Length: 401
Ligand SMILES: [Mg+2]
Image 1: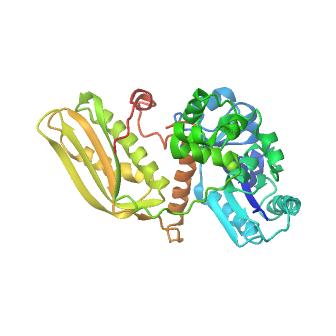
Image 2 (image 1 turned 90 degrees about the horizontal axis):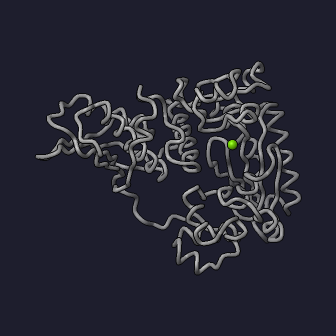
Image 3 (image 1 turned 90 degrees about the vertical axis):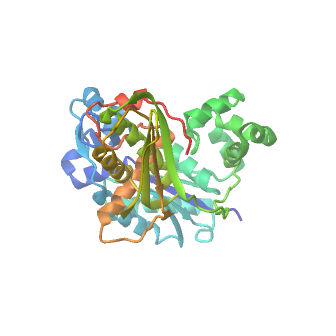
């Protein structure tokens, strides 16, 4: 018997929670922002805002041009977190195996809990109406059902908003893959799309039909992973037993050798963001860090220290790193900057007294997800600098850490 996996994804989640909480916002164009400054970015827009072209990643000032009536709100993670808890409590009544994937997404293994895909689809409808009845009438979700996690998420992603889509056979799978853009698949971003295009793979059905040995040859294990996904083969995420990294970090050689702390601080922020993303991507948190820079000649300045709190978000890493930079006198122009975090442990998930902190973690993960799908720095965390996007546009990066 095939497995029956359900994926649930709340629609326009943060914006819908805001509209649920405040009826005056319903039916209006709403954008939830990373920060409420002109350079802040929209991290979730309501259906009405989306209809006006205000998408995730859009800058707040641009959103106002697209729709002068848009209501921009600063995000309130604690609010979304408590709504998520209520939604997940409903999901838990249907299966013993729920995997929260993000603040507004989860996988549910229904194998054994329902006898077939038709019953799973009925359950999906029931879940949708229970969320509206028990959590909030303004909350909608898309649900996908299939036999692998990838296909369940894919079905949910291409399902109409508020809809349910079941991929229950290979015939149905071929039908939904045909002419489907590569970027519609989980794990394929614009860069991967370009690499697949070079192989002559133009849509997801081409990827399915491509020769397995050839894709492995061209794109390695990652290529095989993508191929298996669209062929309905589950690649289980069993830990391979390789040891966790001891430290995670990035360094950067500056195109402009300078003592300008404002510029250096911008570069530092990007290094912290890169470091933070890899930290979070590995499900780790850190409690020590290292920052340093090299001068154009005669060595440089390096400092390592333990931190009282666990480091997880980009802001936390940046705050510590920037403090060192601020406090230290630069004796000559700097040519290289480096940041790393260490003393790594799996991220603690138990609720602590600092619930808001956990919500910030989830917000960080949500932003990482957006950046994974589109491009680096689609969403930047806050208006760190008065110079807007200068650093983002001008500074290229190569990973060496
Ligand atoms: Mg969603």
